[in-house]
Image (spheres, rainbow, N blue to C red):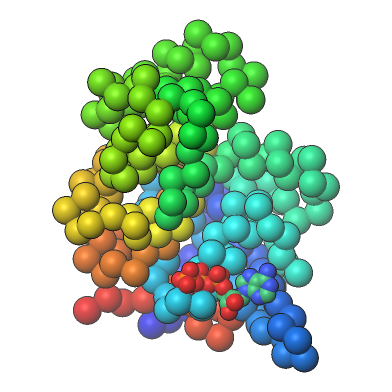
Length: 237
Ligand SMILES: Nc1ncnc2c1ncn2[C@@H]1O[C@H](COP(=O)(O)OP(=O)(O)OP(=O)(O)O)[C@@H](O)[C@H]1O
């Protein structure tokens, strides 16, 4: 295991620069990130593998501009987000980052198609164009026949595939996924991961994917873990 590699790319999709994050639990200060650096390049898939409680979700939320770090910077496609106000960060996030959660987080009252359309319409795309792109994405995820179904009418694997389609709907530079197959049985998990991989490769997006599943982690380009508040390369057996 070595310090995570490479800071030579002038405009990587994502760069974490000396990121710090601490929580205070009663009298105790818990340091999760202590000057963490990382570079994620367009087209690469990186597994984030670390024990429960190590800080994977914290790292993904900071990388995804959902939470502010206590120190350091998050640079998305060359744009520093550290000093942005909340409105600017939200706008940046919507335009450049896709997020997939362990539980799909789809809106229950909307169809699969509408769930994929919504982030595009929030960004200003017309209803017609958003529908066209969403149909293409759902077809690609082999969900074309399910487009009009609501989340409750879909299986867990289908719900996650809709969530993945939604995450890439705005052509993000960076896709962040927090145990996207953690809630699925092994066969479905592999199927969903295959779909995620195909979409990531096709889109050339940079992906950081937290997983406890070493078999899936091995299929990515490289793996990292969290150690003493730093992001370090992880060699999987
Ligand atoms: N808002 C918060 N306030 C206080 N402590 C927090 C907060 N958020 C997270 N923590 C603590 O920070 C640590 C890291 O949490 P995090 O959820 O990032 O871990 P994780 O690696 O994603 O865990 P898991 O694999 O179980 O999801 C945990 O000890 C958690 O209790």
